[in-house]
Image (tube, rainbow, N blue to C red):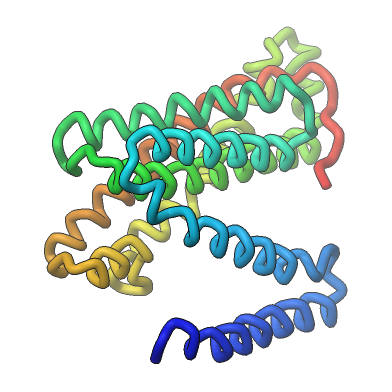
Length: 249
C-alpha cells in the first residue's frame, strides 16, 4: 500500500479510536472527557509537522540541538503546568529534568554504548525527555495530593518542632516511588507484554533483533536513570511545605 493509499484507512482508524475513547469517558461522566481525543488531534498535527522537517534536521548536528532544546522547553512547560503554575515551579521542573536527562545521556554516549551521532542523539534524547516530563508531572502531583490528604499529620510534625522537609519526608518518598511505577512496570514487562516502540522501530530500520534489543535496553535504562534523578531532585525541592497546598486541577 502506498503512503497516500494508506492515509484514508489511517484517518478512519484514528477517528474511530478517538470516538471510542471520548464515548466511554463521556458515558462515565469523567471530567474533561474529550481531552484524549483533543490530545490525539494535537499529536497528529505535531507529528505531521515533524515528519516534514525531520529529514532535513536529522543530518545537521546544529538543528538536532535546536530540536532537542525545543522538545525540552515544551516538556518542562507541560510538566510545570501540571503543578500549580509559577515561574518557581517551572525553574524547579526544568532544573530537575535537565540534570536527570544530561546525566543519562552522558553515560549512554560517554561509554560508547550508543554511537554519538545526530540521529541517535535525537532519537534517544527525545525519548528520555518525554519520559522525564511524565515522571516529573506524576511525582509533583502525587506529592501535592499526599500532602493535602495528610495535612493534619504534617501540621502535627511541624507543631512538634520538625522542619518542613522532615514533616513531608515520607510523602516525598512515596511520591517518587509512585511516579516511577509506570516506567518500572514497562521495563519489567518489556518483551513479555509489550514490544517497545524503539525496539520495533530499530528492527524496521534494518537492525537485527539482537541489536535492536541492545538498543532498547539502553533506552529503558536511560529512562529509569533520568526519571529517578528528575523525581528525586524535583520532590526534594518541593518537599519543604509550610502552607497547605491548593488542590491541582
